[in-house]
Image 1 (cartoon, one colour):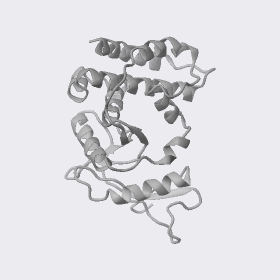
Image 2: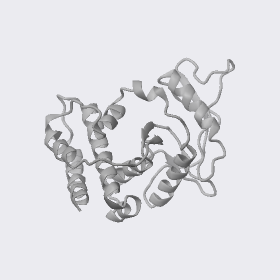
Image 3: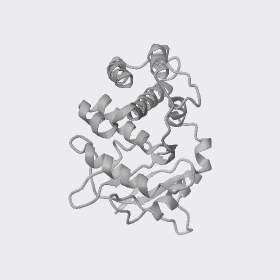
Length: 240
């Protein structure tokens, strides 16, 4: 609609908080973020809808992994001192549940066919010392690229985790869905801690998919093959 982008608002409190957060990040170095538009009454949600100012650019990480990760890190640097929002504690969507499972804070009902794979992945987990902060947990398809513009970061998905975990989710997506090479892991997630972040990111994606399918459902063969393939690589990476 004109230069505005409309989308279902979901939880009003989340939208209001995100809108204020994005407003404070306008003009950030190394990234762009959408500006939420206020209604005539001053709020950011009208009849279940929210609107942001249109940002030029196209998604697509292939050939842009370094730029995507750099934009994410600049974004996270700008978020470094933002306090933890209480709203995170009430989120129960599949990705919030999967994130807690990945960090050993919860369990979830998933299809029987992935129980064995998850058990092996969980057994590889070791503690990490990286500090947590506010991060965007779904950057891969939500960074827009345009000539002569900084990358635009959209559809903020907030989590309270280490910045390297956000990088690891991008890398896991690359391995799962874009046939990214192992050099991406080497450059983005070096060392034992990087391997642990990648392990958690893979669990996160697998559990989220399992929760979406449901306990009585089943992953399709292509997804199961993807996760099995990448799990083998991650296991080798963790074991050194």
